Length: 276
Image (cartoon, rainbow, N blue to C red):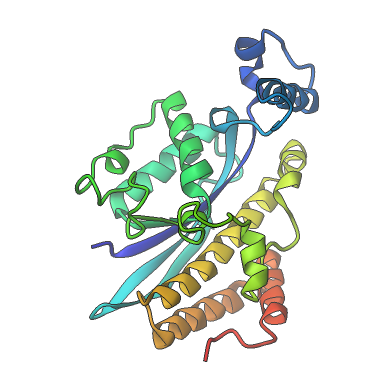
């Protein structure tokens, strides 16, 4: 049984360094390079989708929330231990990716993400292979049905985009849409479309803080999900929420992004964080 939750999210920019080998062309500048990579994907999808596929993303931030899983019989609750981004403002991609796989390899946590099976983990695996980073723990755990790579093992990796759509049986939604429906704060300040420009401007700290608030949203959605499924109960949910609010309040004075998130949460929930 896992002792920790590891809620994670990544931010990326298109990897234009692949263009010479992929298309035979070299970009004169980053913006043109991204347009060239987008055009490549439009061409191979007959104009349907210009978004770069998973191998062609460079990881610029990996953020995570680690929480201890506390059990009372079959009921769980969670205590937030840390929320941060891997590495520092000068860390290279290889160091970020290696740090992610090394840290999780020591914890063996329950992974929690939103579309992590469809995007974040595939990107991390491709970039790990690019940099020669090993992740034995990810691929060789438990048995055929209970492991990190099984689609239907949410106790190992709970991808909320998957489980909330019943694995594609109903319409998939964006995280911001689910947050709006459940009176949760959703994205505050920045959205993913701005990440490349922020990266070009050297605003790495801003990217990391934005990524951390996405992690917070994912964690809050997960708490609602486990309450609904019975993995937690109302007391456990409210306990976890109260710990999270206190954690954010303690740090809001030093981290404006946390203060903004907390204020957005107060507004979206009409001042009531708990479920009665």
